[in-house]
Amino acid sequence: MSEDKKRLTIVQRMFTAVVLGILAGVGCILLRNAVGADSQTWTLINQALFVDITSSEGVSGIGLFFIIGETFMHALQVAIVPIVLVSLALSLCDLTQPERLGRIAARTIVAFLGFYVVVAIIAGIVSYAVAQSGGFDVTLPGSAVVETTSVDAYNPLSVIVSIVPNNMIASMSSNNSILAVCFLGVVIGICMARMGDKARPIRDLFDSINGLVQLFVNFVLDKLAPFCIFCMITRSLAVYGVDYLRPAAVWIATTMLLCAVLAFTLYPLAVFLLTKLSPFTFACKTAKIALFGAATQSSAATMPLNMRTCVGELGCSQEVSSFVLPTGMSIHMNGTTAMQIIAVTFIGTAAGIEMTPALIATAALVSITVAMGTPPIPAAGATLVSVAMLGAGLSTPLCYVGYSLVLALNYVPGMAVMPMNVVGDSAASVIVSHLEGTLDKDVYNS
Image (cartoon, rainbow, N blue to C red; front, side, top):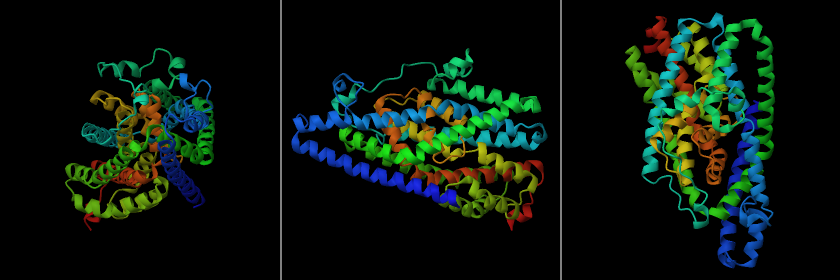
């Protein structure tokens, strides 16, 4: 309970930071219009607070808000490689322990991957359609256009080659090689499971690194994020205007609508197609799970209710649910994947980058892999949007403006993301129980 209260406090702080940042940013816009963008007063304010000190015009400036925002982003980025590598390795090591292998594990993994692929395809199509319709467009000022970039044309199949690194150390030295880091995490996790007790020292080391990284990220998000987000949003509005707010609202609305629709259409339809049972019964009985997940935004807090519903109302076997639900809580996050794909498309489009189907597909592939190893820390899904963003090659300053909004406003779309995650675990439990021949259809239909 204390953790939920603490998390709520973090959300309240971030919400306050967003509101104050918008007000301060709009105030700066009004002041700039009143005194003139070329006046000495605005020049002094811009040089002291907002100027990019790495640019030619910022050589003699202070750029306090720019420094704070860049330092905050670097603090999050420094944790990307260890988060992905360690959490993914530990997740797969737990999943592939010899005593837990078998048909249930295999069918569970297939069900999870099937949902991931379908959700990624739908989210990619929807986000591309929204981008093409102009929903994520931002009218950039002339001075900012130079910061945009175009990703060179390439064969999407080249992504396959980049997944397997030719140098393990080199791949972990750059945030631009996330797919390679994911590959290493998978390989290390499976190998640790195969080695058994011989890998215990490595497992203990990874556990310690995981705890260290979580402690660091918790500190950055809890203690620094509200103030840093205030500075980033204020600077973004003062420099780029209010145009970013509309596409950010479109991102939120698209994410919430898509996740809500998929939670009550995709999963019931999958249950119907694979078990021939009523999809309406499934939707009705899992509605309370979705509502509880939306309220708590915690898959761990929702799992007891999910377990009771799966066994007592959906007729799943205790054996299957006891494996599927905890495993799904760790590696099955379809809502997070959908949110990240839409967020990356919003970030790139708003930054003036053409989000081609190939780029979105790359972001989707990274999002699926990252979701399997998302650590149980506050705002982890939103924080790791940067992984998918960098995996798609989006690293311009304007990309980080969009990312700061995603990080700050994530709580609202999270109310639809979490229900999709937990209801997906329920659907997988029903499907695997049916395939195992242990689903009690009388209980399901009662």
